[in-house]
Length: 78
Image 1 (cartoon, rainbow, N blue to C red):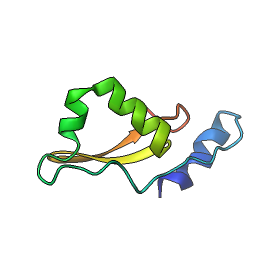
Image 2 (image 1 turned 90 degrees about the vertical axis):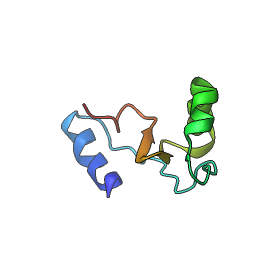
Image 3 (image 1 turned 135 degrees about the vertical axis):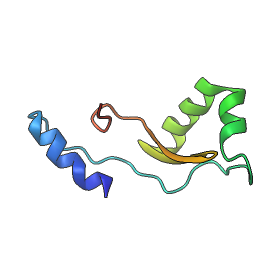
Image 4 (image 1 turned 90 degrees about the horizontal axis):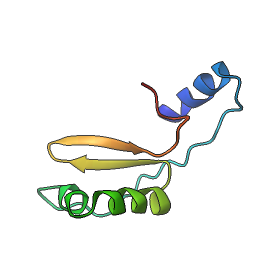
C-alpha cells in the first residue's frame, strides 16, 4: 500500500529509499469520539507521543474522519 510508494518517490529525488515504520496500533480511541479528546487536551504532547511511541505512520480516528499521522518528511507529499 503506502510503503510501496516510498521507494519510487525517494528514488525520484536521488535519495535512497527509506523503510517507514508503520504501526497498526495506536493509543486506544474513545468509543464515540475517537482520538479527539486526547488530541484536544494537549495537541503537541499527543503528536509527540505518537511520533515517539508509535512510529512514522500512525492511523488515527478523528471523528468522523479516519486519518494517518505522518511523521517523516520523505513520506509527506503536498
